[in-house]
Each structure stands twice: as C-alpha cells, then as structure tokens.
Image (cartoon, rainbow, N blue to C red):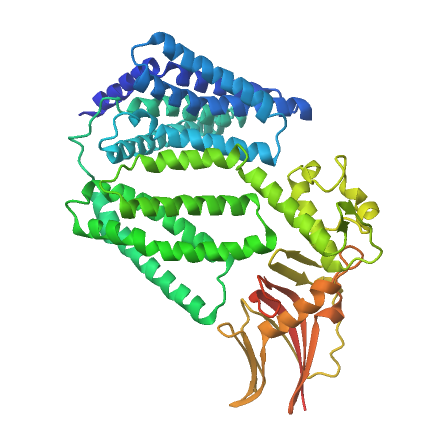
Length: 585
C-alpha cells in the first residue's frame, strides 16, 4: 500500500471510529475544550480552581468509561438502541454521583480512589469487548497493544512536527507565539487525534483472529531472552532465600517489591506465550514449572511483609503490595492447576481487585484506618495512656513513646483524616495532644529522622568546630566514596563488603573497626535521647574515640543513615560520612 493510500485508509478508519464510538470522541473533544477554557482563566481563587479540577477529573474519567460502555453495548445490546441509550444514561448518572460524593474535596483519599477507578476502566478496555467470545483472547490483547503503539508513534510524530513548525515560525518571524499554544497542541493531538486514532484501530467484535500470525520477533524476545532472564532471577532469589533460612535474617523491604514486580511481570509473560505453548517446548516447560517454583518465593515474601505488619500495621502502600501479591499467587495457582487456560480471567480479576482496593469495607483506606487505630489503642493501653476506655494525661513521657504516638497520628494527619482516630474526640486537633496525653505532637526529629525502620542523623557542617591539636592526621571519608586515603607512610582503607575501616603502616595493621557496629552504637544512643524539637544532634553525640597500642583515633560522624527493621542489635548501613583524627604514639 502506497503512502497516500495508507494515509487515506487511516483517515477513513478514524471517520468510522467516530460513528462506532461517537460518545467517546465527543467527551474527548469536551475535555480539550474545558482544559483550554480553564487555562485561559489565569489564576482563579483556590475554591474555583478546585471546582475546575473536579470537572476535569470527572470528564477525564468519562473518556475510558464511555469506551467501556460502548464495548458493553456492542457485546450485549448490539441491535437494541434503547438499551444502548440507557447504558450511557447510567454512565452519566454514575459520573454525576461520583462528582458529588467522591470528589467533595481533592485529597489523598480522593486521588487514590480516582486513580483506582481509572485503572479499573483502562484494564476493562482490554477485556470488555470479549466477554462473550473468549477464543484467542491473547491475540485480542496483542492487537490492542499494537493499536496503542501505533497511536503513540503517530501522535508523537504529529505533535513534534507541529511544535517544530510553531517554533520555526516563532524564531524566523519574531511571532512571539505564546507557550500556551504548545500545550493546546498537545491536548488536541493527544485527546482528539490520539483517541480517535486508537479507537479506529480496535478490532470488531466478530474478529476471530484465526489468521492472526504470532510475531516472530516477539517470540524470539520472550523465548530466548525474557524467559532465560526470569529463570536466572528465580535461581538468584532461591539462593538468597536459602541464605535467609541459614542465617535467619529476614530480607530487606526492597526484596518484597523485587519479588512482587518480577512475579507480576511473569504472569503477563505466561499470558503472552499461551498461544505458542503447543508448538514451543521452552514456553511449555516454563508454563508448567515456573508457577510452581515461584510459590515458595511468594510465601517468603509474605512472611517478610508480615514482619512489617506486625510492627507497624497496615498502610495503603502495604495493603496494595499484599493485595497484588495475593492476586499474583492466585493466578500462579490457576496456571498450575487449570488446563486449557482461559486467560481473560487475568484482567477481569485484576480489575476487580483494583476496584475492591479503593471502594467498600475491604478497601485500602478502611483496612489501614482500622489497623492504625488498633495499633494506636494497643500502644496507648500498653504504655498506660488508656485505661477502661479513658485517655490518661501523663507527666513523664519518653521520647520513644512520643515518637511512636506522634507517627501514628501523623499517618492520619497526612491524609486529612484526623477525625478518623476513634480514641480521640471527634473535633480533635494535633495541637491538643499536650492537653490530652501530656506531650506535644512531634512527628519529625530535627537533626535526625526516624520513620519506621529508617534512620538518619546528621550535623550541620557549618557548625562543626574541632580541636585537632593533639592529633597528627585529619582524614575525611564516606562509605560511598573516598574509600582509600594515603598519608605519608599510612594507608586508611574502608572495605564496603564487611564495613571494615583499617589503618596500615606498610604491611602492619594498626587498627581495624567495624563502621556498622559504631553506627549501631550511635543509633541506639540517639534514637531515645534526641529532643525532637528543641535541639538537634549534638557534636558530642556523634563522636567515638578509640585507643590502641600504637595509635589513638577519634571518629566524628557528620551523617549516618541506615535501617533497623526488627532487632535493636542489627542494622543495615545505607551510608556514613565521617572525619577521622589520627594520633600516632
């Protein structure tokens, strides 16, 4: 097909897409008009700006919603115009109710719920057209992804071309084109041209994909690159978890996320290789064995997450990690037990999980609020602040207690949900904690920061004044750089592998210190003694002195950070900066 014919075909398809999904195109145009109007209003008051944002969010939600409703009409009401109209009326009612009840104010809760709803609708685009005809579903998804790729490329080229034209006119003819027109161009290309092009590329409902050829490039990518990489990654995780069993040191929080995203990616890899399972032995073996091999890894991930939950309770982030992990585990069990696969279950269940996560009694918000309330009540009861349901004001409150209670209250404050703290009065304000519990609300630590398992202590470099008269050498080092320093016939070396700091004179070892152990000593001292507001970390708090047979040293830490997840006698060191003063005897 020649270039002119290809362009004509694309424009013809876009015209047909307007006939097929007119509501979606109209809503997209309306969204662009509203955005341009809002931008032309300049800087309105906060109240007006919030109304504009609510309207924009509602219309933005209407774009994928209208497309999903169009799919439902094609699948279930293809010849019934009345029911098709009622479907869109229900959609309008939903948007009005959403605006009224779920966008009363734009806060963390509203944004997360909106994002979840948008994700639900976007996932729905991938399966709603095949709710009745589930054959060759994988090819349907590949076709949609192809449409997305084509839309992105065409839109990007068109946008860059128009921008280049505007820029050239502006520079050559001193046109002084306002920057807002670049933004308007982006809106038009993305939401009018892009949306119209995307829906024009969508297959018809009666497409059977029997003549659809599986991409050879995709097959090579998955079979010979992705699957081997995932297999190696699985082996590494098994070795790592074997180490955990031997040492009984629970994994870092990062490991849970690595396991989660790797296993989630693997779900979609198995989804993509399903059409070639019969013809390709590697794909078939991967589908048979991987879902079973990943289950012990997922179990270890859940055990690791449980450690965090036991200490700090649910938050939205932990909730989403757990729920996604449960979904991945369920899909892996499905892959292990069911044959042949009906992979449409993957996006359907995922979209329902997303919806459940932001609405209803089991949503992330309700679960997290209840968990943090229970955690607060337990801590208050255990430490004598709560007796028979009555709050007790105490005269002496330790820094640990202040920090723990303040951090829990801070969770609610950050989400503008202080009124959800059940044990406090309905009109409670954080400024009243002094009157209610006997100490001021202090979630942050000046001169240091402790959040759950993370800690960081530092000195102001402009206020460090040292007396170095009694020492021969002054050396600055950091665990991420400057790991070796030669002074005269001395060599100071930091070994990251074992956190060891060594001083040599020729081949003779003058001293050796474990920096991580020193940081742990400081952390255990500082975490209970810091005054959260009145003063920061003092210079003397960050000094450690050692006296050896042939050398005396003073180490002044000016910045240390790390993690102290579950046990006071163990930390992981993220980094440390320090000054070493050396006196040779």
